[in-house]
Length: 432
Ligand SMILES: *Cc1c(COP(=O)(O)O)cnc(C)c1O
Image (cartoon, rainbow, N blue to C red; front, top):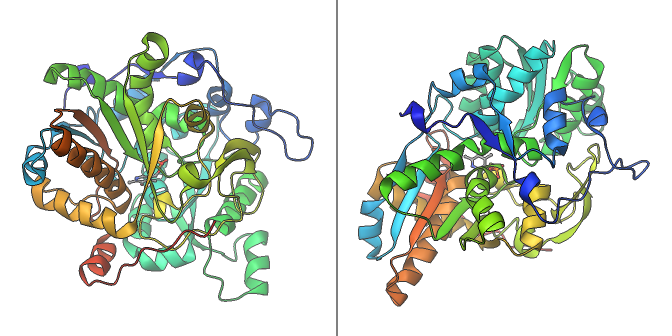
């Protein structure tokens, strides 16, 4: 770890974008939302950051920096063994965001969100979680800043990944399988369907209900929102300094894509040179073939959640009622995309590829066997896209510099690896 690599400010790409993201709309009135509206459910500072299209640099609070120092800077690694196994002339680098107490990049935003809540006099935070990465990061951050934390975890994924709820409870959070009997929304669902397996939609409804009916309780999100990718820019800002030390500059930047926070976190600081100086970099978002909003979705206003509680967001979407197949990369099973990335894709600053599930695990296995790190099923998509690009370099002989984000490790996802190794994994078809 090198503290001198740790940035003191986050980078807000909205300030430098030529076409700004369109406004979020109130679904009832179709009027643009104000920071005040958003502050009913989110921390006021996060609401302000969400809509800030003016300030390119936003100070990281000292207390958050102190917590970042527990695990940052994170390593930038040259994947020599992977390059050798592929026989590629490409130089492959990865930023290792799995090296922290929770094992994924989500902690980078959980810490500031909890810090701002604490500053603003909030005592409780709540959220929903699917695979459990966000819930785990939030539980840790809530404890760090002395907040109570309640997580609604999709019931079926709680059964599939039991250790994630153990982690959340170890950090002091209350974890409810959703649908639960602790909210009206949950009770209604259980009354209608006692065996409901739960979904992100049911979990969001319960968390939002808790936040709006409990005094001093705020709702938090681990992806999609612009303030979340703002916090994640620590990844790219560090990577920029580290690449400079390595004496190289990336031609290609790759990250997996669920709602866009780890992609934006790595890509946006580099993209500022594209926006301001016309620097040419190939930015690639890697999404699952079974949930391909960037490659097969439409750019339109849509709800951020299944139930239709959120504001209307201008984004690439498969429709909020789209039910993604039950792939193991739980963090990528989301119908929409962040509004910043959606605008950048529309304007041609980046591109997207879709990766079948079995290709992603084959890539994850090769990475584990060469680089000794078992990647999260989500991160395997970035690795697969990297391998595709590195193989192209074998044909062309180009020594391209490829940088990808390792968004997390897969040590709590070994049932997924077991199904792959047993030959039980399929490639669910996308039905648009
Ligand atoms: C949540 C998650 C993702 C997807 O979320 P983004 O907001 O698109 O980054 C990717 N990788 C891991 C390990 C995750 O936990």
